[in-house]
Image (tube, rainbow, N blue to C red; front, side, top):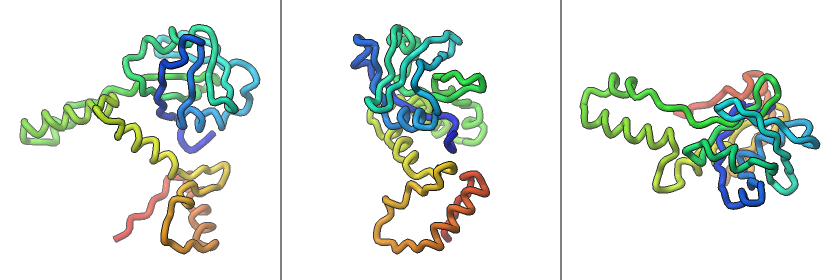
Length: 186
């Protein structure tokens, strides 16, 4: 399994009439780590209803009867996907933010109210622009894949001379700490 256990993805209803969902980058990354895609996989939604859908990584699609019905209960088109302990694919909504924490931290009531609105909008991916989803999607490109031992950010670095010993050191540290290391430059 990859470093992330939950993946954020964005679905479009464009192909629902032919019982197909086109996968975005988040879904492709998620399904790349699943060992067998030959048989239909069991998907569960928040109501614990089980649906079987076929995943085709070559065509980057998920297909099967009832696909539209599976997604109609979700208010947002940005959802989480993860693999449960019983090997089912679980799709869930974004969690609702606890705004009481914000109110306790900010003494200015006007600022607290505005901060709460912004956090709710970010949490529910309800923005007039796609910037929040795009930022999340871009951040996924910079993760370290423990099992493949690759630093995905290397092709994105510009005007920097990278030495093999540096890359080996970073990979070693990231592997030992299971991808939970970071460096703060002062």
